[in-house]
Image (cartoon, helix red, strand yellow):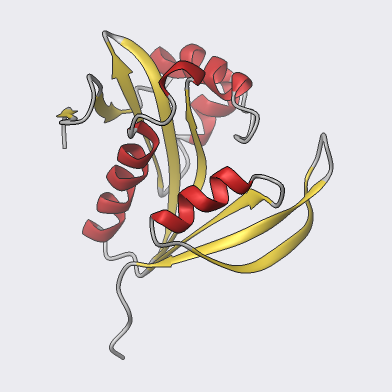
Length: 161
C-alpha cells in the first residue's frame, strides 16, 4: 500500500518497520494512558505473529502514531492504537484505524473487535464515531490499575450464507 498523504494534516501512514520503529513506538505507547504499553521487544515479536499487521504515522520523519491489528480467518481485532500527545485530535488516529480497517476489508474480514477501558469515555466515543458498538464487558481485563474493558464490534461485511 505504500505511504499515503493525509489531506487534513502533514502526516503519512506506512507499514511498521519492526526493529527500526520499535523504540519510537514503545515511547508513544508509554505516554498514552489509554493504550496498552508494550516494550520494544514485545513490539518486535508481536508484529512477527501470523495475521498481525501494524502501521505507523509519521510527521517530518518522526513517528507520531501506531495501530496494530490481528486477523484470524474472517475476524480481526484492533490490538493497540496510540498517537503522540501533541498530535491528538487532528485526524491521525482516525486515519490509522481507517487504514487498518481498509486492509481488513481487502482480506475479507467480516467483523472487527477491540477492548477499551470502561473509564475511557473519549476512546469509546471515538470508536463509536467510527461505527463500533459496545457489545460486552470483560471483567478485570486491564491491570495496573485493574479495570474492566468494554468490548466493541464493527461489522465490515455481513455474511450472506
